[in-house]
Each structure stands twice: as structure tokens, then as C-alpha cells.
Image (cartoon, rainbow over all chains, first blue to last red; front, side, top):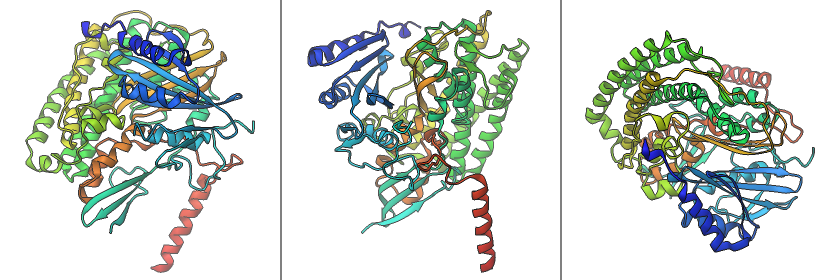
Length: 152
Length: 390
């Protein structure tokens, strides 16, 4: 049973490393000792997410995209597995044509995840090797994205 | 020059909708493309129009096999936002149903695995042994599937004490049957010939493609949410994470077989240690905020993210089933294999398309392009055309 008791030291170290490397360009919100929400600018997006995968061995479980009045929000959930915590990296993209560099060339797991966000929210991932829609039907109009709330 | 071979739009064995195009040179596969999107039901959008209690019923319908996992993950996410402490009895009851679900899911796959390699005895055995597990689930929750068992704060119903002896007896019998089946499978040269060394997924690829569950653990990528972030009663019972380093189809099958033994261990301990007390805590209000719930479903990690705006309905409910992350690993697995193995390699991740796809076919005005009547009309039309040719 003792193997389950932990102090969540790894995720604390991850957050410390993010702060040392990126300074005040990362805005950390600590929801609990197992849940962190980190907000970064569009320019820091790839450096921070690559750092999470390559240096901290974070596993990209999935990404949530959502349409907000201020823009389209990307939230990448990185699980720090042996520590049992999730570090979420967040950025806000401007509408009506949200655009950001793709993580897929550095981390293949992002492939389907980014295609899904492109499909439903119309986010263009620059540098994605295979930027096709994935889940919606083939005869859907190319400029219609079901999860966008623009028309409401 | 490569030839393109289409497999689909229905998987030839699993009777599930997917469409694979294989690029082959002679008998050897050199590339593959996977096309999804045939069972969309608009669940993420629908979840935003349901209350948190109704959401648990809705997410159960994502998949008939892992209905307990999805509703537990949703409950965990809501409890994360609202800061609810779940009573001990509820944690144990939740764990028992979750592990029974793992048993019936793995046994279903063992049967299908036998079916895929043309080994009908394994198929018959597997599904025969699966049936008592479903009876246990029916005795505990009232239904063989779609248990309506989990709710934010605890479980929905209490269980009478008379049920447990029957479940314990079924577990003892099942344990012996799994031993028999495991030994029979691992001793059979024909099955080993079909599985061993086929569909290699290296540990590096398993990590890079973000695979989950038995798919990852068969490639020595040691990830299990039950151990990594203990929820339910997993930190209070004795069990092991099964990891194999074979990296081939056999390793994944062995992980599933041995995991069933561990699940039986967990269930027996939970029943013996089952505490008394309330079965649910009351969730009075869900404040503004964000919550994450993830559980280890039979196929891998099942991830739910909920954002609340303070009302009784979620503002955003993201659901991600394990198959969505496991499907991309098909590409490195199938390269260099023969066509005859491609169907097996694709089934080794235990794909579930209903889980993967959750959106309806819509046009820009929000109307369904094909409804039931239309599909029926098309089917009649096609039958008439065929009749003309005869």
C-alpha cells in the first residue's frame, strides 16, 4: 500500500522547471496538488508543449478545444504518470481564423488530437503533416465547424 | 508500385464501421490510412444541454462495453470541481462493478481474438465464461450493461448482502476457467504461430504515439491510472500491474489474460472488505471551475474534462475514449506485415468505434442528412436493383 502514497513531488518539479525556463511568460494556476493549469501566449506554445513532452516526459492524454466569446481556447492535458497528476497547458487563439503551430512533427500522439480540433473548431495547425478532417462526414461544408458558436 | 486494398467500411470480423486503406507491394503492407467518422452521435454537444446527473446516463451510452468507466470518469470530474468526498462504501461498490466490467470486456476480446484467427473453440469458450460475469453485474446493478450505477457523489443504489456469496462463487469458478483458458492458449502452437512476432510496436513508438491500456503495457510502456492516480479502492487492495515486453500481438493478448486474474483478486478483496455506511454524498452545488476525471477502462485510460459555469449543466464536456489514442499505433504496427495479418493487428488494440466517435452527421442548417426512413428507403431501393439483375 505504501507504494501508493506520494507527495506529488514530480509535478511540483515540473512547475518549478517551467517557471525557471520561461519566467513570467507562464501563468500557473494551482487547482490542487495534482491539477495545474498553465496559461501561455501563442508564441510560447510550441516551446512549452515540447518541453513538457521532451524534458518532463509528460504524456499528452488529449486536448480540449472550446469556443469562447474571446476566442478559441486550446487546452492540452499532459499527464505526469508516475506522479498521478495532470498539468494542463492553455492558450487562447483569436477568431475568426484561429491558427497555431502544430505539435505533431515533434510528438506523433498529437496527430489525431489536432485533426479533431481542426475538424470541430476550425483551428489551423501550421506544419501538421496530414491536415484533414477526421470525424465529421465527408460532405460537410469545408467552412462549417460543428463546435463553433459563432452563429448563436 | 504499390496496390491499394480497401478494408471496410465495416471491419470484416468485428462488425464495426471503419475504413482502412492498405498500400501493399505484393503481399507486404507498406503503408496504411485509417478513415473514421461513421458512428457519430453528437455526445459532446448533447452533454452541454444535460444536467450533471443526466450526463452520467448519457456518457454510459458512449459504449456498451465500458459504460461504467465513462460514467465514473464523469463523476470524478464533477467531484473534482465540487470538492466532494465520496463515502467508503461507495468507493468499494464502484470498484467492484468497474473490475467486473474489465472481466467481461477482456473475455469478449479473447473470444473475438479466437474468432479473428479462425480458432472457434477459443471463441466459444471465451463467450461461455463471460456469461456468468454478466449475471453478476445484473445481480448487483440490475442490468447486464448500462448499469446506471455511478452518480456524482457515489452510487445510485445499495446492494443486498445476499448477492455477495453468489458473486464470490462466480469469481472462484471464473478464476479456474481463466487459468484453463490461459494455459490452453499459451500452449497451443497454432495460436502462438499466429500471434508471436506479429505486429511489433516498440516501446519508443508506444510512448511517442501515446498508446494506452493493454496496448501500451504489451509494449513495456508501464502506464495504469489505477496505480498512477489511485481512485476508488485501488490503493487499499493488493494487486499488480501486468506489463509484458514482447511488443507483439501475443504480448497484448497475454496482458489481457493475466489482467483478468488481477481483476478477480481485486473483486474478492473488495467484497470481503466492503464497509458499511452511506452509499452517496450529496452534491448540492457545482461551482464555477474546471475538473478532470480519468479512469483505467478495460482498453486504457478514459479521460473526461468538464468546465462548469456555476449552473447545473456543464459548459464544456470533453470525453476521450482510449481507442482514439490507440488507433494511430496501427500504422507502425502493420508496416512490413502481410495482408492476412492486417485484420488481426488492427483488432489487437480492441478497437471500439462507438467510443471514438461521438458526433452526428449534420449539414450547416443542423438537419440530419440521413435519417432512419431515408436509410430504409435506400436499402429498399438497393434490394430492388439487385432483384432486377437476378
